[in-house]
Image 1 (spheres, each protein chain N blue to C red):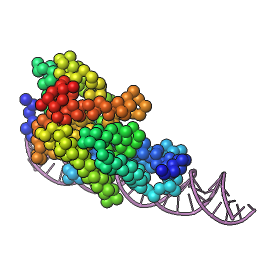
Image 2 (image 1 turned 135 degrees about the horizontal axis):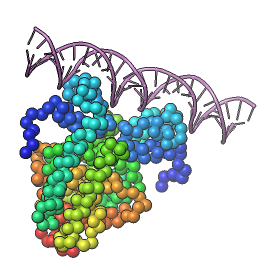
Image 3 (image 1 turned 180 degrees about the vertical axis):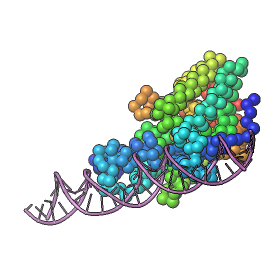
Length: 199
Length: 199
DNA sequence: TCTCAAACCAAACAAGTGCTTGGTAGGCTA
DNA sequence: TAGCCTACCAAGCACTTGTTTGGTTTGAGA
């Protein structure tokens, strides 16, 4: 277990920045916004960080390292195909609950940031994510859990988009827990919204 | 039928601006970006438009007027409950196909723009959209088409988010037509991805 | 008490931002 | 051919942007 006793000033600034990046977008957040929220002057940020870019960089790298570690655990587990898919879906909603700002930044700014060399790892992580999901879906197909007439690439895109987009409205501590949301979403995804059918 | 024979220079500039707004975001697109893409100087844009804001304004208003007109047609139609839902879903993918940039702008910038009085109609349209979908879903429930154990508010949010998010990857003229995508999505939404079940 | 490092301030910088102003080229019409 | 209108240019203004620089405060250890 990693020691994470006291939050350093640096970590605190990163957390403040992440919140603003998530709320307003990376480019639309100024270093003065961040400094104001932290109660310091903008120039003082450069005592802690090289640049505004390096702030998002740190935020995204640590987030993705954590997330993909958990994806790997699911892949390596001995769960059956259907349970693996369920776990992967639940992981998304857990992550939205625990790391909302980071998810939002990834959703909103990854495409734009990915154009710069410094953030080329975003594209690699994107591929990695696709491989994880396609593996899970192919296992589901092979196990006879999924319908044969599905376009798996399309299913992947739908799932990828839909499990993360809830970050736009989900608020931790609200009426619905992340587990509630995951339950409903899994029900819709796996069985659809219409009454019993057997096609 | 409105005459729309020749595209005026003004319309052309709006189309160019919409493409850039969709690609880079409203605030991250400069008037010089737009002017460059149009082959003129930035100041010349102000012969056609009051401000950069009024450009998005025109783009969003005309887009929403068209879209909600079609929603109303569906509501007023004499289709059965399930067919109405299908039509509404298909309308989304048709719109992504025909008005991709406008959909992207709405997806990416509506939240941020809606904070200003000038764009308060965005929040109203948002409510209107929710009413349309909730009406359709309630009809589906009353008609016995939808399962009784669904949280309709949640179902609405999922549908709303997922029918529009395809704008991130769908490209007109690609392998998949908007009808292909709609077919698959409807299949997933209505019947789920798992093999026949009757719960 | 002295030292030192972490954290911050105060002021400025060059580049980029939306927008304004006064003027011009060219075509259409009276 | 005179007047006018649409579309544009050239240059600049006030402001905001990320970042830099040199100095100051504060608290803990020697």
